[in-house]
Amino acid sequence: MPKILLTSVLAALGLSGLLLASAAAPRPAALTLPLQTAAQLCAPGATKCQALCPETDCVQNVTAPLISLTTVKALAAATGLEVSVSDEVIDGKTYLNMLRLGLPDEPDEEVSSLQTPAMVGRGGELYYRASSVLGFLIQQGGEARFSSLPGLSLEVRGRVIGLQLGSAAQGEELLRELSFTFLEALLPEAFRPAAQCPSPESCSSSSPIVSARMSSGESYRVQTGLAEGEVVMLALPLSAQGPDDASYAVAVSPVDDQGWAEFSVSEAPKRFVSRREAVLSRPENRGNALLVRVTNTPLNDLWGGIIQPAQVK
Image 1 (spheres, rainbow, N blue to C red):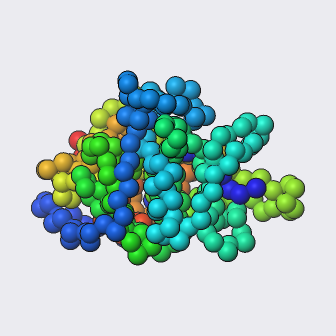
Image 2 (image 1 turned 135 degrees about the vertical axis):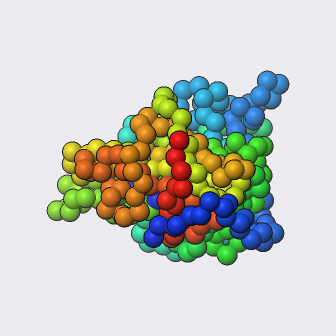
């Protein structure tokens, strides 16, 4: 069975006290993707709106930007992907209108395909999590990068994809949902199966748990030295007792006009690090933190976006 991505649900830089200049203006978008939330699609008065997602009360509780099947097909045509939709039964549960994206003529479906369920149906159109689609596109290799907010765009596979969002907050939410993708790009060894497989029948593996939302915690501010509209990610390794229970807490924040980013974290980082082994999920790394710029940084080289904050509060 193809690999399934069901999203419900990464050299230090010395910084001066001056804000870094904004990145060069991006090229004009070759394709624009309209993104909407479930609440927008199913607002009072909307006709023929149906919640299809596996989550309970997803129209009210899922704030992720969604992308229509029509738009997915246009994106696939522009970037060389193949698209199909079918109902799937996985572990005894039926998922309606499952979207499959894949690379043409690729025999190894385990590493080259995405399956993600429909979240909303309205007026004959199906809508899927934009982060699932864009995350898969980013993972296919080659250079990819996001522009800064509020005019968020993604440059990938030689094309500039404009993201038509209702607000900068939706762009921030999209990048938060992509935290798993960013962290995997930073720490690929943490996402590889830890055990060797004696045979296909006895092979089992698990991915680290990545928590991108803090239900409670204290506000924590860092001075990034970056320009307004850049977005940074804070990643904290949590204690793990073995290779199969690794976990991370991540949070994203836009940078304000004074260069500050603000996070809600369950525990304040004790130290900022830039060495790869210092941010793996191990007991001795508890308290370490990684701060990385995820906009205007090549996503296949996020280590080039590591920041040592000039000040913390």
